[in-house]
Length: 417
Image (cartoon, rainbow, N blue to C red; front, top):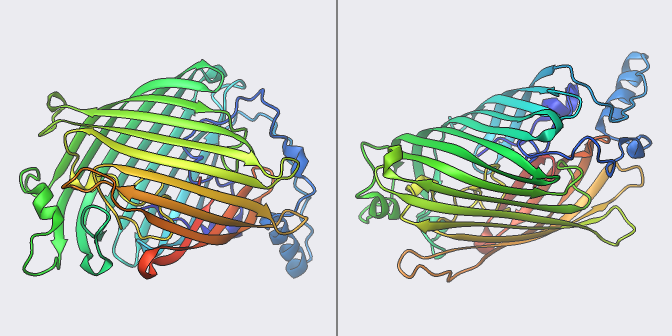
């Protein structure tokens, strides 16, 4: 759902761009020295190339960049125009803004990110993401607020659906998700949050003629005046030992979110969900900088039935990264099991270029049986261009394949997970 290419950020190099899942996740405590910034000072990145090009074309020499990882408490604000592409959006233009600061010298860096995106498919995306840290990282306030006008494709429910049965469904949406996390001990956080989701102006565009669609069958007694609504309390657990969330070299990450939507919070009917997001990063071989990264994203409907547009679906994670090889929303169901493995390796000794190979598999339960009956594998490979050597931020360009001719280009700033 996000637009994922920020070419202007590459060209202008105005601020270190955080990874797709680094924008709202806790970072390592300031005292952690596992990730030493100076280790990468002799590597080459895109900003170095831009400096060399500037020197070549203008004759003006660019001062050599240094980064010691020093703690800075002042507010830094930057804004850039950009261009984007994804299977779900096509080409897009956007303006992005970024603010970073520390509330105290003992706190992780707090971030606020926003952008305005308009796509060739007349989609509008306006997110406001923030991760605010208090002193000694005792509390972390995380927000994910978004406005969407997002005509996109749906293919029905379960794993037996066909690409030929896909059609467009139009809607606008407001998402207001906020969470307060408290540190129990280093790397371990618990907390609560409130999630508000409102979909309106929902309209099926050119659905199959002469048949009842899965959307109509599923929503016949739930949708009210072309709207879907959900209001829920979340209970959160987070365990994160990664030293660098933008491009982890090692460590573990487990995020568990239990959401309860009850009628007393304004819901038309009650339902509950559970999301388990777990990742592991293993240096392989052990004495190299190559990484074997493993990811599982499991999304279950514990009770009741969520609105159709809020059901587990391909790319339905907060940053639309599950299911490389398939378009957003290709599969949908009450429960989702997802597993992915990726091998990340260097291609050049100067650190500028790298490569990845990945394989994933997703499965969704069928409405009739409630069982996982099919598996949709995805696989592919990609290149990495080092955007910033100190934060280890890469520009990720992958081509993914799926079953029955599915495939396409997937681009990120930062690693997919």
